[in-house]
Image (cartoon, rainbow, N blue to C red):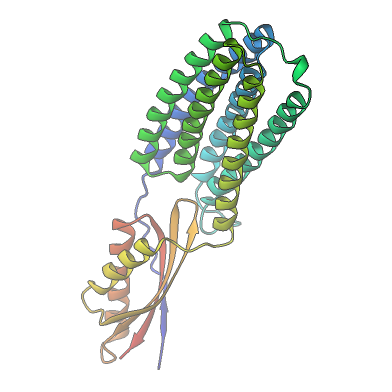
Length: 302
C-alpha cells in the first residue's frame, strides 16, 4: 500500500504571550510571599526554640528557590524554534519540574535527618514560646491564599508547571497546619510534638519531591498523552471530511503540548493535492481544539 508523509507548515498561534505574563505575575507574587515567610519563620523559630517552625521556614526557602526556577523556565520555554531546537523549547518546563522535584526531595531528606536527631534525645527538646504559634497560623493562611491564587492562574493558561507550583503551595499550607498543631502540643506540655511535626513536614516534602521528579522524568522519556486526550484526537481526525479511517495514532508530551503521529485512511483514487488538503485540514482541526504542537500525518489509500 502506498504511503505519503505530509508535514503541514501552518502553525497556529499558541497563547504564549498570555501564559508568559500570567506565569511571571503569579510567580513574582509567590516570590514575595515566600521571601517574607522564610525570613519571619526562621528568625522567630530560632528565638522561640521551635524546630517545626524552622523546618517550615526552610520549606518556604525551597519554595523561593523553586519560584526562581519557574521564572527561568518560563522565560526559556517560550523561545521560538531555532537551528538546534526545531520543535521549540517547550521541555524547559518539564526540566524545571524535574529540578523542582530534586530540590524538594533533598530538602525533605534534610528535614527528616534533623527531626530524627532531635527525637533521639528528647531531654534536650526545649519548650516553644507562644509567638511561634502566631507565626505558624499567619503562614498557614498566607500559603492557602497563595495556593488559590496560583491555581486559578495556572488553570486559566493550562500550564502543568504552574499547576505543580500551585499544589506545592497547598502542600506548604498543609505543612504549616501540621507545624501549628505541633507547636500547640508543645505548649500544652508535650515537647515531643514539635520535632514530630518537623518530621511530618519532612515526609510531606520528600513525597512531593519524589512525585514531581518522577512525573517529569516520565515526560522527558516521551510519555504519551492521556487516554482521554488520545481518544479526543482520534475523534477529531475521524470527523475530518475525506478521512475514512484512523489508525496507528502515537503521541508524546512536549512540555504542556503534545506531538501527534497518525495514519489517515483516504480514498485511493483522489489526487495527491486532494490528499494533502485533507491532511492540512485534519492537522489544523487538532491543533486548534487541543494543546497539540504539531501533527505528523501519514496518508494510507484505501
